[in-house]
Length: 275
Figure 1 (cartoon, rainbow, N blue to C red):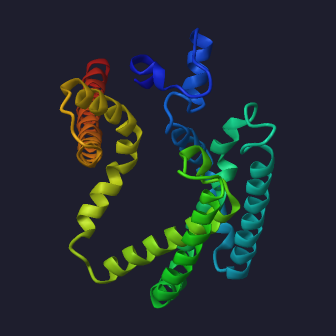
Figure 2 (cartoon, rainbow, N blue to C red):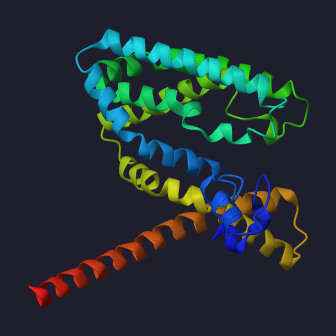
C-alpha cells in the first residue's frame, strides 16, 4: 500500500521498474518506519534459534550469564563499528541498511529469552529492586540525551538513532522497567491488564499503518485550511493517527478472520465433494 499509494514516502532511492519495486518491498524502504518490519521478519525466521537457546541454558544459569555477556560485548562492538563507519561515516550511503539487520537487535531477543527462562528467579529480583532500576534509567536517559545534544540543536531524528552504544543500556533499562511494572500488575491482578493485552495484540499492526494515516490526516488538516496553531494541530494529529491506526488494525483482523473462515468452509465443502 505504501509503495503503490504513497510512493513519495520511499527512503533511499525510488523504484522505476518491477525489480526496484521488489527491492524496496523487502528492504523496508517503502516508508520511513518500515525498516522495523524488515527487522522483525528476520526474527520470525530466526525463532528456532531462540527455542534452541532456551533448551541450551535450561538449569544452567551461569551458561545463560556467559551468553548474555558475550552477546552484550558483540553488540557493543557492532554499534561502535556502525557509529564510526556508517552513522555519519564514509560508508553511510552504501551500507545504510545495516541498521535493520537482526544483529543490531540481537541482545534484546537474547535478554527476553533468558528472562522468560529464568523468570521464577529474575521476576522477584526485578520487583524488589524497582527503585534502583528507576535511578539507573534516569542516569542512562541523561547520558543518551547528552549524546543527542552533541550533534547540535534542535535534535533531529537522523541524529537520534537506536544504534549508539549508550542506547543499548538505555533500551535494556527501559525494557526492564516495563517488565517490572507488568510483573507487578500480574501479581496484583490489576484491572488494566486486559486492556494492556488488547493494545499489545494490535500495537505492532497499528504501528505499521500509522505513517499511512499520519500522512492523510496531515493532508486533511491542510485541505481544511483551519489556520490552527501548532499547539492544537499536533495533539490532533497524534490522536487521529492513533485512533485510525488501531481501528484499521482491528478492522483488517476481522476481515482476515472472515476470509479464513470462508476458505476453511470451502475446503470442507470440496473435501466432502471429492470424498
